[in-house]
Image (cartoon, rainbow, N blue to C red; front, side, top):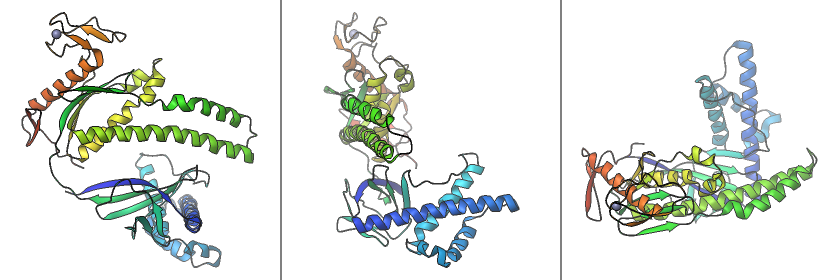
Amino acid sequence: MLILDVLKLRIYPNQEQEISLAKSFGCSRFVWNFYLNKTNTQYEETGKGMTYCQMAKDLTQLKKLADYEWLQEPTTAVLQQSLKNLESAFKNFFAKRTKFPKFKSKHSKQSIRYPESCSIKNGGLKLPKLGIVKASFSKSVNGKIKSVTVSKTSTDKYFAAILFEATDLNTVKQGKISGIDLGLTSLITVFDGETSYEVDPIKATKKYAKRLRRRQKALSRKVKGSKNRHKAVKVVARVHEKICNTRQDFLHKLSRKLVDENQVIVAENLCIKGLASTKLAKSIHDAAFGVLLNFISYKLEREKGKFIQVDRFFPSSKLCSCCGYKNDLLNLSIREWVCVGCQTRHDRDENASRNLRTEGIRMLSTNTVGHTEFKACGEAVRLIGTRTKK
Ligand SMILES: [Zn+2]
């Protein structure tokens, strides 16, 4: 089975490469805008748009004209890719999937796609006409590179998204089965069958909130359209980026750790929207449950593990994980309680993570038609459909 994987990484072009990239961004944007306009005009006149083939042929002729010679500088494939993107933008519009294609501006995020001839060489990323660009790889690309998309953010940082064919090892993942309870005071409480531990949320927003407020205030004082305003916009964008990066980084590391340790992870299927509209909104956003679950889900499935979401109406907090007694008196403010059925003292979140784990194992066990056996801490569970179809 063939799996496509994407590795996104930061790249550090030198001055010469930056200039060359700027030209490629510009040409690619020009080609998009030029043919968007030309297609529109032709459509108005003849009732027919332009196909990719027509645009590509037209572009070849256009490049021969003295006024458009500069279009010869970037690699042809990048400009053709821009036309392919334009064609699919039109197709998506006519299929009612997206809005009408827009003209691209040089002030928004820039990106180009190299559909061929990219490789990894001497620890850097080799791109057509650019040579080797310095890059920091967080993991290795062990498969054929299909394409590379290079982008530049509004804060002048460069990134590359490498799409490659991952070699499918087809092995069953080893590890524990853990239940994860999503909390408010602690980010999550994990129970792995033997021990239970809490992970604290990152306070990214609080740390940067003051800075953000100050920068936004400064921005509001700047005259619209002025150079200083443009600078201030960038400064605010940089703080936003910092908050986002700190959080993403934390959640990536946490999900990586959980996926490394487990073959099955069970979590509650929370209604994030409902929670976020309460006064707890800020800590909910900080906790970023949705993102964490998403990271866990895709990383685990990619490695042939199983991510199970328990229905949010399952009373994970109210059930006693020892005897099954249901404590209906429990509300959000009670952190600890004693079961009237068996006198066990419960920490609310730990008890919930134990219940989620048990429920997940029950759900797996009832799906008995599966073909892959998962074993953890003595429990053997047969899974259905563990091979995820891409
Ligand atoms: Zn009990």
